[in-house]
Image (tube, rainbow, N blue to C red; front, top):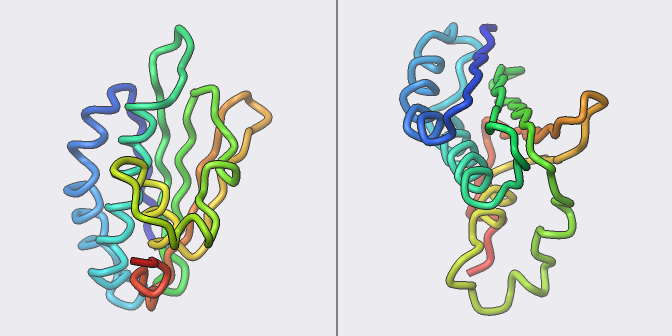
Length: 150
C-alpha cells in the first residue's frame, strides 16, 4: 500500500492537480490493493469540491492558505485526510438534513451535498495544533447515487 502525500500553499494549483495526481497514484498501486476507477473518480470529486470550498469560503485570517493531503487504501477503500490552516467551521451544521435534501435543489451550495453522497464517512474537526482535519472514506463498492435525492 502506497501513501499519497502532498502539501500545497497555492489552492488554485491544488485544484488543477487533483485529477492527475490521483490518477498517477492509482496507477502506481499494486493490483490487489488498487481502488477501482469509480472510487478514484469519487475521490477526485470530493477533493476538488473540498479544496474549491476552502478557496472560495475559508477564513485563513492573515495567513497564507496551506493544506496537506494524505491518502491511502485499505481493502480497496480510499481513506483521505486534508489538514488546513483555516479557521474551520461546523460541518454537521452545514450539511443539509434529509428534509432539506428533499426540497428544491439550491442554485449554489451543492458541494457539501455531493461530498456527503460520495463518501461513506466524513468529519471535519479541530486538531491540537490549531489546524482543521477533513477526513473521509470511500468504499470500493460505494454508489453515491443511492445517497442523492433528486
